[in-house]
Length: 280
Image (cartoon, rainbow, N blue to C red; front, top):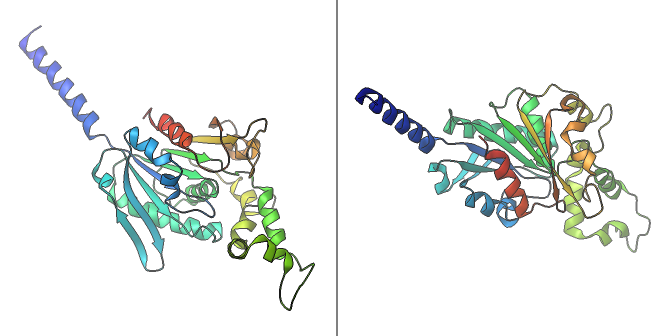
């Protein structure tokens, strides 16, 4: 081999290595209803992702004063994760506005790095609403985890509890049914009425009926479907309702990843996420 060819070969190898070293992706994790950004750590998802080379860049939350960012050292790492904070009990369109502001903040910090979006449960619906809004930054992949993409009958049950009339009043102004359900639990469900309305099974005139008929960006879609032993689905939604391929406008466009898990996040979700993202 001539000296010139040798130099070219060495330079090409160095450039390839440099490209590998500086390559950096950004993953944004969106929590669901009755949850918060810490759920990704408490569930064991983040430790798994960290072991696979993804570092925690911190929490980004949009509120009335503006964006609040709580940075962590992972912001300066290669592959990094931002966990967003949403008003989980608010109507989904309000949560979508928060997510759009948070994504804009993250994109401005990392204007040239590939962006990936993953949402658990209702967080997957909020992520899809952001994508169809036309105002979200370019995202390469959307991953929904145990997301009731076709809606959930549990939302109807929650509305029945919130809207029920007292059937037994042991005292003035006391609703026995609601008091049995539990003070703080009932109050959270009551304050979540708008979110529950948005998560009822998709039908004409419902938010999910509208969402599931909207054009979605031409990106990769993945549905992580939680299933129980002997049951196709989890306690929130059957497997079919979690499957993005059952969304009319996404039929045949999504990869499906079945997982033996309850509705809540599990360390195995971290493994699935890392596997999906590992092929970048």
